[in-house]
Image 1 (cartoon, rainbow, N blue to C red):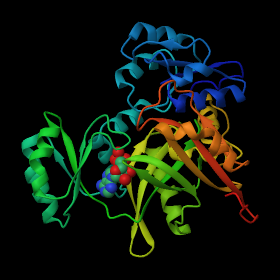
Image 2: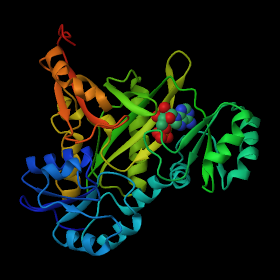
Image 3: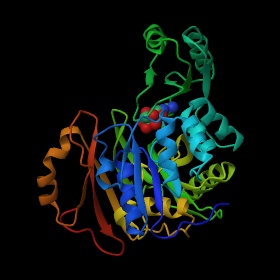
Length: 373
Ligand code: AMP
């Protein structure tokens, strides 16, 4: 096991989005330096990075030079090519481990990981090519699932790379959409709400779990995360146990996000895992304000080989994403609530569906809600 980083050492971050930006700021808080490597020239994380490197992830020479100047390397999104990680692994420790990235990059590998951990996921069929879609749909229907999600194996996020099939009339269009790619066809889960657990695992195996959030998506993009989630204690314990099982199986180091569906009648009575993100996660942004040690700080502590901090929260929280033009109203958003915490990601261009910032409202525990929340 590699040595722990000393203050003043450099954490390399692959990926330059808002997650990388918030990781870099957490590193700076701890007296560590953050260096960002990303392909896009206007990456928001470059604004808070020491000597950023703008190059494609396929530029092995640039990656090698970058790695040599870092004490440890981490990543902020799951589409970094696995072979690029393999190259830098030869030079420096990389966390989370590559096997976690590989499992999260491919929906079939992700399902296989859940199966190996004996964890619940939606019923599915593998669709090797467009012609296999019809029999897969028939098979799912035969098992009582009328509606399904067709998910391309790779590069799916924020609802991209997936299509909902309401019935056999949708098959022809779905086959065109799929083209030559492989996919899984997954039964639609009749969930009460969506939830996620954010957890951190240290190099010595210590694990802390943040309380599950209740998540709302709009057009496949997370719009809001709240704690408490409304999950009963028993399911919170289940969610933690499932997250621990995944982290232990992967010998994980760093923060992970595990997305789940809460299912049941009137009230949730069980959980089904939807997706694993081997990185800090949008649904954990509330930890910046509601916890003493945020997901970003715990991720940096974990990859640096430092002791983790408590994941306990001291407030109820509601985190709201600002998507596209919603962020233009930042002045009104602030004026509405003086205790509101605002984050703007410094993105030069506003585009529909692009995450431009978020805000977080808190209600401290043991205190009545204030008039403005
Ligand atoms: P994903 O990219 O897999 O996280 O999916 C994006 C969103 O689509 C999820 O957050 C859910 O709202 C919805 N979704 C995906 N898969 C399913 C499913 N099997 N059943 C119901 N809703 C789903």
